[in-house]
Structures are given as C-alpha cells and as structure tokens.
Image (cartoon, rainbow, N blue to C red; front, side):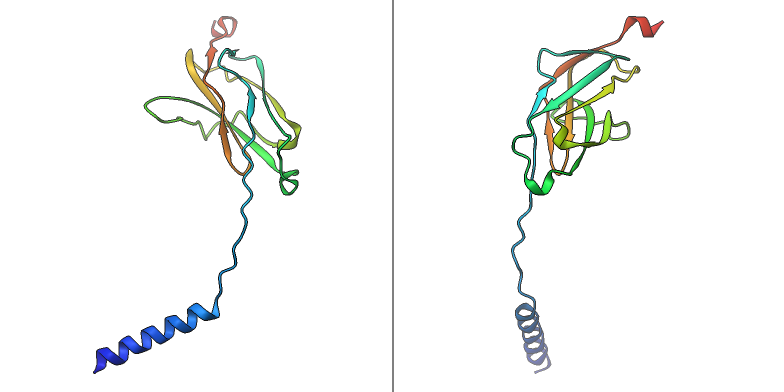
Length: 138
C-alpha cells in the first residue's frame, strides 16, 4: 500500500513538473570559417611573422562582432595536440579575415602542424611545415 501511494505521488509530481516547464527550442549559431592559409604547401620559419587567413562571407549577422582564438597543434595518433596554453593570437575580430603573429622560436621541425581557429566553433587548417630559423638558433 505504501509503495502504491509513493508511486502515485512520484508520478503525479513529475507529470505536474513536466507540464509546468515547457521546453522552447533554441537555435544555436555555429560559425566555422574556412581557413584559406596556411595550406599544405606552406612553410613557416620560427621567429618570423606569419598570417592565417579565412573566409568571412558566411559569418552570421549575430557573429559579426565575435572575436577569435588561434591555436597551434600537430597531428599525431589521431589527435590535434593543440597548445592551449600558448595561443598564437587571441581577441582578434573574426570578421577581419586574417591575423598576423610571430611564429614561436622554440618550435622544432614538423611537417604535420595545424592551426585551429576558434570563434564559436573550431576549424582546422590543412597540415603544413614549420622549420627552425637557423639565424635564431645560434
């Protein structure tokens, strides 16, 4: 008898709560800009200026004032290995379509580097190469 009353009360409670709080659909905006540079043939040299560029023609009106974050990573064993502690650039306007920065001087040669551009979503570039600047290694 006690379990029947308990079951009734629990069922009644959840049916009242479910009716009292209707869920309204919310449209989420996702802007994932296409990176146009670097490309697979790009070679960056450490301690020099580099640019990353992306398309801006599909930025939703609601995202026109969004800022971006640019991270460096490399592909290895199915992971992007992003360096989240040392962004290449941050707080730049996504609507600008490019950002310039200095390639970190402590990087080693790899031909599987990528950059990932974050606004409200992330978009990775093709793999490219970074090579040490012999003039800065001395």
